[in-house]
Image 1 (cartoon, helix red, strand yellow):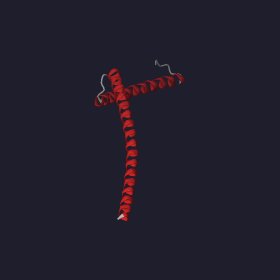
Image 2 (cartoon, one colour; image 1 turned 135 degrees about the vertical axis):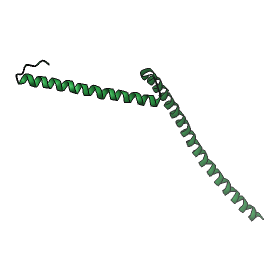
Image 3 (cartoon, one colour; image 1 turned 180 degrees about the vertical axis):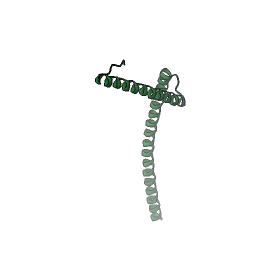
Image 4 (cartoon, helix red, strand yellow; image 1 turned 120 degrees about the horizontal axis):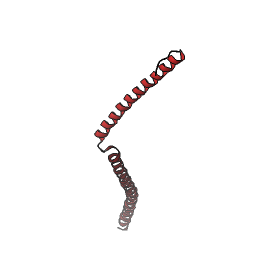
Length: 110
């Protein structure tokens, strides 16, 4: 009978040890997950604050923080820049033609 108790005690002890090891692994995993959650929450709060600041800046500078309106405004400004570059290019070409005429000795008003 004593042998049976020893086997039972031994099995119980091994079982307790396995449970204890598993519990320790789970505690470590929980600790890592908890740290990850804290870091993720901190990052989320930082990103939300950055987004708030950028929205306020967009409202101040462009009158809106709506992404579609900002895209439309950007396209308008690109078109305006294209037009201005084209006008500047024509202006430079006119100056070059005027200089070429002067170099040839032609008297032409620029």
